[in-house]
Image (cartoon, rainbow, N blue to C red; front, side, top):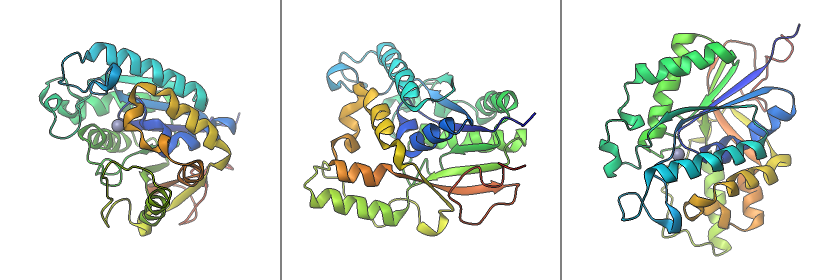
Amino acid sequence: MDRQLTLMVVHAHPDDECLSTGGILARYTEEGIRTVLVTCTNGEQGDDQGGVKPGEAGHDDAAVAERRLAELRESVSHLGIDHLELLGYRDSGMDGWDGNGHPDAFANVPVETASARLAALMEHYRPQVVVTYDETGGGGYGHPDHVQAHRITVAAVESSGIPDKFYYTAMPRSAMKQMFEMMRDSGVDLGGFEPSDDFGTPDERVTSVVDVSPYVGRKLKALQAHESQGENIFLLRMPEQTQQLAFSHEAFERKLCKVEAPDHEEDLFAGLRDA
Ligand SMILES: [Zn+2]
């Protein structure tokens, strides 16, 4: 019997799955590859109804988590993902927020504790390909939960020895520059956000670019499913042409490769399909 090809993607919050990996999740599922999304936190520090921020009067952590996990399930169904695994940790909030100090916050959980749980999921699913963020939490993002997701995934990949290929999501600097220029030209309100010259992943670190253009519509639907966080998802307010450009390719930095694969590849499963 042919072995089951499996992709495991590790993200910090409900909604993170869409932009950088929604296309590969949809595409590989459609190709018959088993797909597993691991979401580490419940997103408690997201917006409550009416855009109420954590720490403001009327922000109900439990209600936010419940709503966001329901939105996550809807997003998962748009992308066709086979298995959703929730680690259930508490959202730490953005760097500097009060939530950072909560003892149960994901970022405060010892790496070995959380990575042991992730390694057990790797034992269960035996993914040949694993994807998460780089050491900055993804192109310099720096969110404590994204950095923690990176740390526990690196530790689980090392301790389990299971994946043949291991990747970080990447936002190539040149593509980011082009995208922001396009948005500026079409008068999109970036809320004063001005990307610095070192925003995104240096192009030379990008090893793998996957064409997911047939799945742009499904990525968009998945993103829209996270309705309660809509205010924070500026990509939803971009002109269609910019969305097409921003969503049609997903880029990655390959960190581990135990099989024969080209230095620059268009398929995360290159070298694994005929084995
Ligand atoms: Zn996130």
